Length: 534
Image 1 (tube, rainbow, N blue to C red):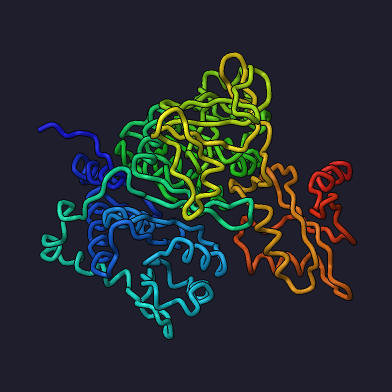
Image 2 (image 1 turned 180 degrees about the horizontal axis):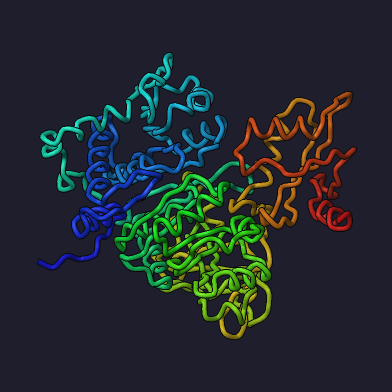
């Protein structure tokens, strides 16, 4: 019997489980999960979610650190024909509350060490959501009015092999098709509120297939990722590896870079996805030559363009490794990549359109501009997502109709030029976003957070060049009358009330902020004065 390629994200896990049942799919510390184990556990979770009332198209939020539980959760949610939402582990209560309400999530899967954040987020609406707690049952909170489940209790039957034989099979799972939503990926918005990018199974598989094609992945690849799975770059490492039957070595952070680099030799890693922050830290290491990188075949970079000097130094450290410089947007996953053979000739380019995708640089009227002229980058292809959840107005501004009903074009809002050979050069973002630590951060969102601090009258945030972070967040603050605050006070407040990546690196107190004639804060003047100060 001919087995056709799966059309759903979770079907690829099940296919790899049939092909490589005892192969290690996921390595996490000392834990080693086979394809068969992950497939079985995710199916079991799907049954538990459906028993708890999850129906087709429902949204399920996952708030966990990188872990096997997070991987099992996302595949279990998909097998229940629902839509997963993975959130960054440092998210705070107000943002979590907004996302839960915006998505109308039915279930929240989180860890018992997040109890305070969950209490802050749920408040009086707790009864409307079921919470699944990962971690010690004894640490599950009392007093929440919501329905609560313990992760360990869900999977306790799998410890009994006789019960395991009776667990629900994939054949009994609810029907789902490839145009159904697989995920909502919440990304910062220029309005200050996060926006949920709608990704279908078809979108995600199409994007993953194109990336696998140009990287030339195979079942022998072992990918080490330190990127959070809430970041689509990290998420796709798992999705792609489970499609081609590879292995993922999952880490929780790149802050202990020595340990991460040791894992490359220990696990015989072949692929290492990075962001510019990781590269900057790596290049600062004095003893980089002591590590064994002999198994490494490729390094990929996205999140922000690598400085040309960093590319040159990487090529010196890793002469045998293919380096893929890439550019992408959550709204379409990936735009383009630089073929490694071209990297030395065009180190400042982010490459050409990836397979099964087409890009153009256009003027304000949507007309393609000649080579070497500046314009807005637009993208078309099956990797172009469906728009923003519950925001048809913003979706219509960003995703526009093509030449026929199914053809949709993504207007990136980013300024590019394209050379005669079709290579793309990123020039800047049209909106007010900051790229720091591999994250796309809304300046407005950071400003809103700072302005909740007592004694702050106004705040403006810009991104400034930073060797480690790509860009660092710099906050200009006007204090209310008779208020005394220090830089330390502000940073402490931000650390307690914002995600880690959104905390400013620099704080400057000013008497007033420059304004435009219509009363808006003039960011151009701020950036110009900051440049002059440097």
